[in-house]
Image 1 (cartoon, rainbow, N blue to C red):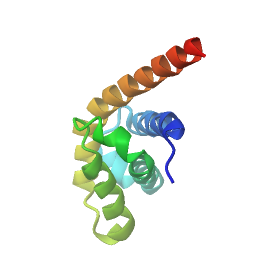
Image 2: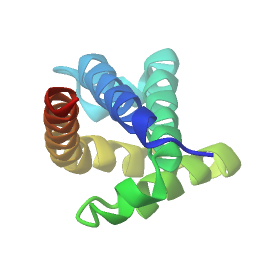
Image 3: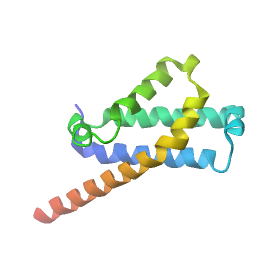
Length: 125
């Protein structure tokens, strides 16, 4: 059973993975990233973790935030894990360039909301 109290931790895992990816790609062109197997596979692994963490969020949490493409995030994780031999490096690069920053901003906002909720709950008790 997925517990709402764990949603914040899973969101923090997503933020950590995004930070790791940003560190791994900082200042490097696509060709250098995909040419460095360790770096590339470290990035891909972080994408898997992002998808797994998103998948483990409670259904209620995800449904309350439909502006985030949860299904696509989890779908990418599943594709990488099960279709590992046909993952398109250009698609990985596209996700890094186009999708991670908006996702980071959304997740940061969700964490702030959960922290505020925790603080208001602790004041009530």
